[in-house]
Length: 338
Image (cartoon, rainbow, N blue to C red; front, side):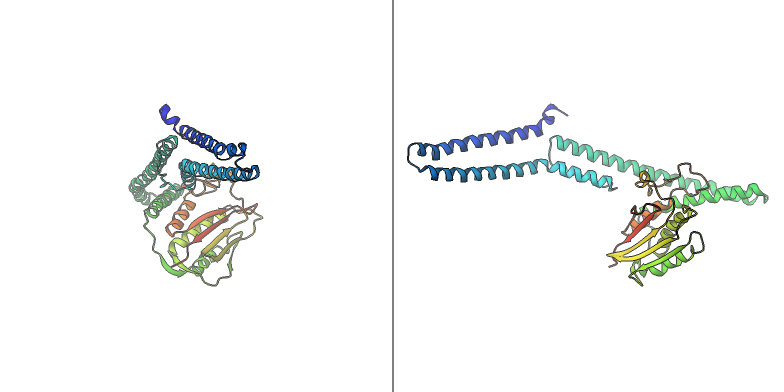
Protein backbone atom coordinates (compact mmCIF):
# COMPACT_ATOMS: atom_id res chain seq x y z
CA UNK A 1 0.00 0.00 0.00
CA UNK A 2 1.48 3.33 -1.02
CA UNK A 3 1.88 6.32 1.30
CA UNK A 4 -0.71 8.15 -0.78
CA UNK A 5 -3.23 5.35 -0.18
CA UNK A 6 -2.46 5.23 3.53
CA UNK A 7 -3.11 8.92 3.97
CA UNK A 8 -6.16 9.26 1.72
CA UNK A 9 -8.82 8.92 4.43
CA UNK A 10 -6.95 11.30 6.72
CA UNK A 11 -6.58 13.64 3.76
CA UNK A 12 -10.35 13.66 3.31
CA UNK A 13 -10.86 14.44 6.98
CA UNK A 14 -8.26 17.21 6.80
CA UNK A 15 -10.01 18.66 3.75
CA UNK A 16 -13.35 18.65 5.58
CA UNK A 17 -11.81 20.46 8.54
CA UNK A 18 -10.12 23.01 6.26
CA UNK A 19 -13.40 23.70 4.44
CA UNK A 20 -15.19 24.16 7.77
CA UNK A 21 -12.50 26.57 8.97
CA UNK A 22 -12.79 28.63 5.78
CA UNK A 23 -16.56 28.72 6.15
CA UNK A 24 -16.24 29.84 9.76
CA UNK A 25 -13.84 32.60 8.78
CA UNK A 26 -16.11 33.80 5.97
CA UNK A 27 -19.19 33.77 8.21
CA UNK A 28 -17.30 35.53 11.02
CA UNK A 29 -16.26 38.25 8.57
CA UNK A 30 -19.86 38.49 7.38
CA UNK A 31 -21.07 38.88 10.96
CA UNK A 32 -18.65 41.71 11.54
CA UNK A 33 -19.65 43.53 8.35
CA UNK A 34 -23.41 43.02 8.71
CA UNK A 35 -23.90 43.27 12.48
CA UNK A 36 -20.93 44.38 14.54
CA UNK A 37 -19.82 47.31 12.40
CA UNK A 38 -23.33 48.89 12.04
CA UNK A 39 -23.83 48.48 15.79
CA UNK A 40 -20.56 50.27 16.57
CA UNK A 41 -21.55 53.17 14.31
CA UNK A 42 -24.99 53.40 15.90
CA UNK A 43 -26.77 52.27 12.74
CA UNK A 44 -28.36 49.21 14.48
CA UNK A 45 -29.91 48.73 17.90
CA UNK A 46 -27.64 46.52 20.08
CA UNK A 47 -30.60 44.37 21.18
CA UNK A 48 -31.64 43.69 17.61
CA UNK A 49 -28.03 42.96 16.66
CA UNK A 50 -27.79 40.51 19.57
CA UNK A 51 -30.90 38.61 18.42
CA UNK A 52 -29.63 38.49 14.84
CA UNK A 53 -26.25 37.26 16.04
CA UNK A 54 -27.85 34.55 18.19
CA UNK A 55 -30.09 33.32 15.38
CA UNK A 56 -27.31 33.25 12.82
CA UNK A 57 -24.99 31.46 15.28
CA UNK A 58 -27.57 28.74 15.90
CA UNK A 59 -28.20 28.40 12.17
CA UNK A 60 -24.49 28.13 11.56
CA UNK A 61 -24.05 25.50 14.28
CA UNK A 62 -26.92 23.36 12.96
CA UNK A 63 -25.64 23.69 9.41
CA UNK A 64 -22.13 22.64 10.38
CA UNK A 65 -23.38 19.66 12.44
CA UNK A 66 -25.73 18.47 9.67
CA UNK A 67 -23.13 18.83 6.93
CA UNK A 68 -20.42 17.13 8.98
CA UNK A 69 -22.73 14.25 9.83
CA UNK A 70 -23.69 13.66 6.19
CA UNK A 71 -20.10 13.83 4.99
CA UNK A 72 -18.85 11.47 7.72
CA UNK A 73 -21.69 9.02 7.01
CA UNK A 74 -20.67 8.88 3.38
CA UNK A 75 -17.00 8.61 4.27
CA UNK A 76 -17.55 5.76 6.77
CA UNK A 77 -20.13 3.81 4.74
CA UNK A 78 -17.48 1.33 3.45
CA UNK A 79 -16.55 0.58 7.05
CA UNK A 80 -20.18 -0.22 7.91
CA UNK A 81 -20.45 -2.45 4.81
CA UNK A 82 -17.28 -4.23 5.86
CA UNK A 83 -18.61 -4.75 9.38
CA UNK A 84 -21.80 -6.28 7.95
CA UNK A 85 -19.70 -8.57 5.78
CA UNK A 86 -17.61 -9.73 8.74
CA UNK A 87 -20.80 -10.44 10.72
CA UNK A 88 -22.34 -12.46 7.88
CA UNK A 89 -19.13 -14.43 7.36
CA UNK A 90 -18.98 -15.17 11.07
CA UNK A 91 -22.57 -16.50 10.88
CA UNK A 92 -21.56 -18.93 8.15
CA UNK A 93 -22.53 -17.03 4.98
CA UNK A 94 -19.54 -17.99 2.85
CA UNK A 95 -21.00 -16.35 -0.26
CA UNK A 96 -20.69 -12.87 1.24
CA UNK A 97 -19.03 -10.18 -0.89
CA UNK A 98 -18.59 -6.58 0.23
CA UNK A 99 -18.95 -3.94 -2.52
CA UNK A 100 -15.79 -1.92 -3.06
CA UNK A 101 -16.90 1.70 -3.49
CA UNK A 102 -13.69 3.58 -2.67
CA UNK A 103 -9.99 3.40 -3.53
CA UNK A 104 -8.61 4.48 -0.15
CA UNK A 105 -7.65 2.36 2.87
CA UNK A 106 -11.23 1.18 3.25
CA UNK A 107 -11.23 0.06 -0.38
CA UNK A 108 -7.97 -1.82 0.13
CA UNK A 109 -9.34 -3.45 3.29
CA UNK A 110 -12.56 -4.39 1.50
CA UNK A 111 -10.59 -5.99 -1.34
CA UNK A 112 -8.51 -7.96 1.18
CA UNK A 113 -11.67 -9.16 2.95
CA UNK A 114 -13.27 -10.29 -0.33
CA UNK A 115 -10.12 -12.20 -1.29
CA UNK A 116 -10.02 -13.82 2.15
CA UNK A 117 -13.71 -14.85 1.94
CA UNK A 118 -13.12 -16.30 -1.54
CA UNK A 119 -10.11 -18.25 -0.25
CA UNK A 120 -12.15 -19.63 2.66
CA UNK A 121 -14.88 -20.73 0.22
CA UNK A 122 -12.28 -22.38 -1.99
CA UNK A 123 -10.71 -24.23 0.94
CA UNK A 124 -14.06 -25.53 2.18
CA UNK A 125 -15.13 -26.64 -1.30
CA UNK A 126 -11.77 -28.39 -1.74
CA UNK A 127 -12.13 -30.12 1.62
CA UNK A 128 -15.67 -31.28 0.84
CA UNK A 129 -14.65 -32.52 -2.59
CA UNK A 130 -11.72 -34.42 -1.12
CA UNK A 131 -14.00 -36.17 1.36
CA UNK A 132 -16.44 -37.09 -1.40
CA UNK A 133 -13.70 -38.38 -3.72
CA UNK A 134 -12.15 -40.47 -0.96
CA UNK A 135 -15.58 -41.84 -0.01
CA UNK A 136 -16.28 -42.91 -3.58
CA UNK A 137 -12.86 -44.51 -3.93
CA UNK A 138 -13.29 -46.48 -0.69
CA UNK A 139 -16.48 -48.18 -1.84
CA UNK A 140 -14.71 -50.53 -4.26
CA UNK A 141 -12.17 -51.96 -1.78
CA UNK A 142 -14.93 -52.25 0.82
CA UNK A 143 -17.00 -54.29 -1.61
CA UNK A 144 -14.03 -56.61 -2.21
CA UNK A 145 -13.53 -56.94 1.54
CA UNK A 146 -17.16 -57.93 1.99
CA UNK A 147 -16.80 -60.62 -0.69
CA UNK A 148 -13.64 -61.92 1.00
CA UNK A 149 -15.42 -61.97 4.38
CA UNK A 150 -18.14 -64.18 2.97
CA UNK A 151 -15.48 -66.78 2.13
CA UNK A 152 -13.97 -66.78 5.63
CA UNK A 153 -14.98 -69.40 8.19
CA UNK A 154 -17.44 -68.25 10.82
CA UNK A 155 -15.52 -67.24 13.93
CA UNK A 156 -14.96 -64.29 16.22
CA UNK A 157 -12.42 -62.68 13.91
CA UNK A 158 -14.88 -62.71 10.98
CA UNK A 159 -17.56 -61.11 13.14
CA UNK A 160 -15.19 -58.33 14.25
CA UNK A 161 -14.02 -57.66 10.69
CA UNK A 162 -17.63 -57.60 9.45
CA UNK A 163 -18.52 -55.10 12.16
CA UNK A 164 -15.60 -52.86 11.17
CA UNK A 165 -16.56 -53.01 7.48
CA UNK A 166 -20.18 -52.16 8.32
CA UNK A 167 -18.95 -49.24 10.42
CA UNK A 168 -16.91 -47.89 7.50
CA UNK A 169 -19.87 -48.32 5.17
CA UNK A 170 -22.08 -46.25 7.48
CA UNK A 171 -19.48 -43.49 7.62
CA UNK A 172 -19.10 -43.42 3.83
CA UNK A 173 -22.88 -43.40 3.40
CA UNK A 174 -23.08 -40.44 5.76
CA UNK A 175 -20.48 -38.50 3.79
CA UNK A 176 -22.20 -39.20 0.48
CA UNK A 177 -25.53 -38.18 2.00
CA UNK A 178 -23.98 -34.88 3.10
CA UNK A 179 -22.83 -34.24 -0.45
CA UNK A 180 -26.23 -35.10 -1.93
CA UNK A 181 -27.94 -32.68 0.42
CA UNK A 182 -25.37 -29.96 -0.24
CA UNK A 183 -26.02 -30.33 -3.97
CA UNK A 184 -29.78 -29.98 -3.40
CA UNK A 185 -30.50 -33.65 -4.17
CA UNK A 186 -32.06 -36.45 -2.15
CA UNK A 187 -35.01 -34.35 -0.94
CA UNK A 188 -38.67 -34.56 -1.98
CA UNK A 189 -40.88 -31.92 -0.35
CA UNK A 190 -44.55 -32.84 0.05
CA UNK A 191 -47.27 -31.00 1.97
CA UNK A 192 -48.03 -33.25 4.92
CA UNK A 193 -48.76 -33.34 8.62
CA UNK A 194 -45.49 -33.77 10.50
CA UNK A 195 -47.10 -34.67 13.85
CA UNK A 196 -47.66 -38.39 13.04
CA UNK A 197 -44.17 -38.60 11.52
CA UNK A 198 -42.54 -37.29 14.71
CA UNK A 199 -44.87 -39.41 16.86
CA UNK A 200 -43.80 -42.55 14.95
CA UNK A 201 -40.09 -41.92 15.59
CA UNK A 202 -40.66 -40.96 19.25
CA UNK A 203 -42.65 -44.17 19.89
CA UNK A 204 -39.64 -46.28 18.88
CA UNK A 205 -37.59 -44.72 21.71
CA UNK A 206 -40.16 -44.86 24.52
CA UNK A 207 -38.72 -48.08 25.98
CA UNK A 208 -35.11 -46.91 25.89
CA UNK A 209 -33.86 -45.21 29.08
CA UNK A 210 -34.35 -42.49 30.14
CA UNK A 211 -37.55 -42.61 28.04
CA UNK A 212 -39.07 -39.99 25.74
CA UNK A 213 -42.34 -38.11 25.66
CA UNK A 214 -44.08 -36.08 22.96
CA UNK A 215 -45.68 -32.74 23.89
CA UNK A 216 -48.00 -30.86 21.51
CA UNK A 217 -48.19 -27.17 22.39
CA UNK A 218 -51.46 -25.86 21.02
CA UNK A 219 -51.41 -28.03 17.90
CA UNK A 220 -53.12 -31.28 16.92
CA UNK A 221 -51.78 -31.28 13.36
CA UNK A 222 -49.15 -29.23 11.59
CA UNK A 223 -48.98 -29.30 7.80
CA UNK A 224 -45.79 -28.09 6.11
CA UNK A 225 -43.74 -28.96 3.02
CA UNK A 226 -41.38 -31.69 4.22
CA UNK A 227 -39.55 -34.83 3.20
CA UNK A 228 -40.92 -37.48 5.57
CA UNK A 229 -37.92 -39.82 5.40
CA UNK A 230 -35.36 -37.03 5.90
CA UNK A 231 -37.43 -35.65 8.79
CA UNK A 232 -37.36 -39.10 10.41
CA UNK A 233 -33.56 -39.13 9.99
CA UNK A 234 -33.22 -35.77 11.75
CA UNK A 235 -35.46 -36.69 14.70
CA UNK A 236 -33.79 -40.10 14.99
CA UNK A 237 -30.29 -38.56 15.05
CA UNK A 238 -31.30 -36.08 17.76
CA UNK A 239 -32.91 -38.78 19.88
CA UNK A 240 -29.89 -41.07 19.47
CA UNK A 241 -27.63 -38.31 20.79
CA UNK A 242 -30.03 -37.54 23.64
CA UNK A 243 -30.13 -41.20 24.70
CA UNK A 244 -26.36 -41.64 24.29
CA UNK A 245 -25.44 -38.70 26.53
CA UNK A 246 -28.14 -39.19 29.17
CA UNK A 247 -27.02 -39.71 32.77
CA UNK A 248 -28.30 -42.25 35.31
CA UNK A 249 -30.45 -39.57 36.99
CA UNK A 250 -31.62 -37.89 33.77
CA UNK A 251 -35.28 -37.05 33.29
CA UNK A 252 -37.06 -38.38 30.21
CA UNK A 253 -36.30 -36.74 26.87
CA UNK A 254 -38.96 -34.26 25.76
CA UNK A 255 -39.92 -33.68 22.12
CA UNK A 256 -42.10 -30.59 21.72
CA UNK A 257 -44.03 -29.53 18.61
CA UNK A 258 -45.44 -26.01 18.34
CA UNK A 259 -46.45 -23.48 15.74
CA UNK A 260 -44.55 -20.19 15.44
CA UNK A 261 -44.72 -18.84 11.90
CA UNK A 262 -43.96 -22.34 10.63
CA UNK A 263 -43.29 -25.52 12.57
CA UNK A 264 -40.99 -25.69 15.60
CA UNK A 265 -39.74 -29.02 16.95
CA UNK A 266 -37.61 -29.07 20.11
CA UNK A 267 -35.69 -32.07 21.42
CA UNK A 268 -34.61 -31.54 25.03
CA UNK A 269 -32.64 -33.89 27.25
CA UNK A 270 -31.34 -33.73 30.81
CA UNK A 271 -27.97 -35.30 30.06
CA UNK A 272 -24.33 -34.27 30.09
CA UNK A 273 -24.88 -31.26 27.83
CA UNK A 274 -22.47 -29.56 25.44
CA UNK A 275 -19.55 -27.43 26.73
CA UNK A 276 -19.88 -23.77 25.79
CA UNK A 277 -16.56 -23.84 23.93
CA UNK A 278 -17.95 -26.54 21.61
CA UNK A 279 -21.35 -24.96 20.95
CA UNK A 280 -20.27 -23.25 17.72
CA UNK A 281 -18.74 -26.41 16.22
CA UNK A 282 -21.26 -29.16 16.89
CA UNK A 283 -22.68 -28.98 13.35
CA UNK A 284 -19.28 -29.36 11.67
CA UNK A 285 -18.58 -32.71 9.93
CA UNK A 286 -16.54 -35.13 12.10
CA UNK A 287 -16.66 -32.87 15.16
CA UNK A 288 -17.30 -34.74 18.40
CA UNK A 289 -17.48 -33.46 21.95
CA UNK A 290 -15.66 -36.66 22.97
CA UNK A 291 -12.10 -35.75 21.95
CA UNK A 292 -10.90 -39.33 22.51
CA UNK A 293 -13.24 -40.54 19.73
CA UNK A 294 -13.63 -43.77 21.67
CA UNK A 295 -15.88 -46.59 20.47
CA UNK A 296 -17.81 -46.40 23.72
CA UNK A 297 -19.28 -43.02 22.74
CA UNK A 298 -19.72 -44.19 19.13
CA UNK A 299 -20.53 -42.16 16.05
CA UNK A 300 -18.39 -40.21 13.61
CA UNK A 301 -19.56 -36.66 14.20
CA UNK A 302 -21.73 -36.70 11.06
CA UNK A 303 -25.20 -36.89 12.61
CA UNK A 304 -25.68 -33.21 13.44
CA UNK A 305 -24.02 -32.19 10.15
CA UNK A 306 -26.60 -34.23 8.27
CA UNK A 307 -29.37 -32.69 10.39
CA UNK A 308 -28.12 -29.20 9.51
CA UNK A 309 -28.00 -30.01 5.77
CA UNK A 310 -31.51 -31.51 5.86
CA UNK A 311 -32.92 -28.45 7.62
CA UNK A 312 -31.21 -26.07 5.21
CA UNK A 313 -32.59 -28.09 2.28
CA UNK A 314 -36.05 -27.55 3.82
CA UNK A 315 -35.36 -23.82 4.04
CA UNK A 316 -35.27 -24.11 7.83
CA UNK A 317 -32.72 -24.02 10.61
CA UNK A 318 -31.37 -26.08 13.49
CA UNK A 319 -29.92 -24.34 16.52
CA UNK A 320 -28.69 -25.09 20.01
CA UNK A 321 -30.74 -23.54 22.82
CA UNK A 322 -28.59 -22.97 25.90
CA UNK A 323 -31.25 -21.69 28.31
CA UNK A 324 -31.09 -24.76 30.57
CA UNK A 325 -28.22 -25.20 33.01
CA UNK A 326 -28.05 -28.93 32.33
CA UNK A 327 -28.70 -31.01 29.25
CA UNK A 328 -29.13 -30.03 25.62
CA UNK A 329 -32.02 -28.55 23.65
CA UNK A 330 -31.91 -28.52 19.87
CA UNK A 331 -34.53 -26.49 18.03
CA UNK A 332 -35.74 -27.26 14.49
CA UNK A 333 -37.56 -24.47 12.67
CA UNK A 334 -39.40 -25.18 9.44
CA UNK A 335 -40.73 -22.31 7.32
CA UNK A 336 -44.43 -21.75 6.85
CA UNK A 337 -45.80 -23.94 4.07
CA UNK A 338 -47.11 -21.96 1.08
